[in-house]
Amino acid sequence: MAAGKEIKTQISSIKNTQKITSAMKMVAASKMKKAQDRMLASRPYCEKISNVIGHLAYAHSEFKHPYMNSSEKLQCIGIIIISSDRGLCGGLNTNLFRHILKQVVEHQIKGIKVDICTIGKKATSFFKNSGLNVKSILTDLGDAPRFDDLLGTIKVMLDGFDAGEIQQLSVAYNKFENTMIQAPTIMQLVPMVAGESNNMNHYWDYIYEPNAQEVLSALLVRYIEALVYQGLVENIACEQSSRMVAMKSATDNAGDMVKELELVYNKARQAAITQEISEIVSGAAAV
Amino acid sequence: MSIIHVDVVSATEPLYSGEALCVFAPASAGELGIYPKHTALLSTLKPGEVRVETDKGIESIYVSGGIVEVQPDVVTIFSDTAIRASDLDESKALEAKQRAQEAMENATKSQDISATQAALAESMAQLQMINKIRGKKI
Image (cartoon, rainbow over all chains, first blue to last red; front, top):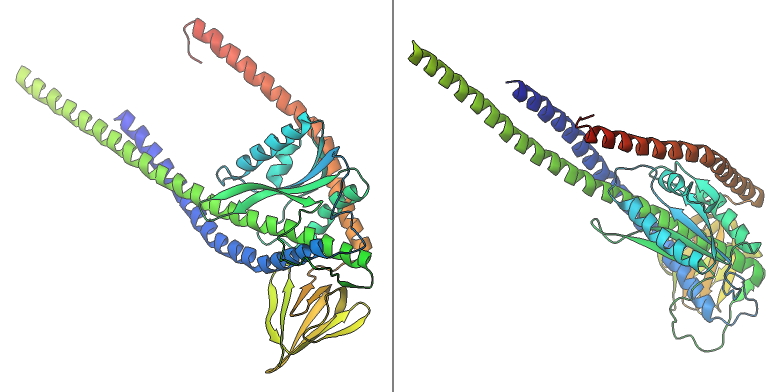
């Protein structure tokens, strides 16, 4: 019964792992609910501010902000990469990174340099050795990121844009479609892509207080920050739901393995008994 | 009686949404009273109180600065969640940059580690191959 004992220890160790994965699944499920609420709570701001940007695109302002339309030739682009701090969440981060790398290679073929800024430990460790210029790093944001935490990182990239070091800025994150589907997304922040038209073709403009330049820069910076924040909270919701799914399948797989091993164990036990009986019987017959 | 739709939102949560008779907002150039059919306006806000007058009473919301957009029948107020000061932002930006530089310096070290690991894996594979040829198992 030596093999039997080995199988038994294997079964018990798998059962232990199963307990851990199923606990992680439940933790992720409860965190996912909170993350989704946070995501939904930040959506109105994002939608409203995009509306205003949409209006602005059709207002006939005399002052054109550099974030609104830039016709400079692309030499270097910046990407803000949002990832999770922790692993064990399926292919979430890997899918995003693969998507980004594909884009990066496309740009590099055209001779465009790529500067990046990483949010989250996974992106930081992945892109550290990629040979891309990492301009800023932000990690350990936790499950409920604060808006203030993002400002420094975004400012580094926008300063780069203002100084002419980069001519385009995008943000890459996982878009939350539903619990099962997370779509890796790269969204262009600056220069801005015009929003939908509301049939406001007649000539009009805002009254700006104190002046157009000041209001527009304040608004556009907030718009960019809102989009990055939205990306971040969506990514967290994705992380939790992806982890929940991954841990659920890990728990199921562990259950299957235990079943198979128990079958093997029973077979071995039965074989041992049969062998013992036949030995006894043949022994008795010899006497 | 004409009414105006008011939305007060912050980046982390919506604060108020509803119809109003008029709205008062603390614009940077002085308090702004907005009645329905106001002309389109865009202004920055300083920290203060937003008062929304409805037929049921007055709703008061504190904002720590932000932006107000006025369209003839809609007012949207974007409240800031973060405390803003240019030098504060600057120091945060510096911190973020510093982290990146440190990581880049460390990257060379870890590159050595990964290069060594790759070399190790290669020689392990060679050893395995040799043992296989000799008909032994590792």
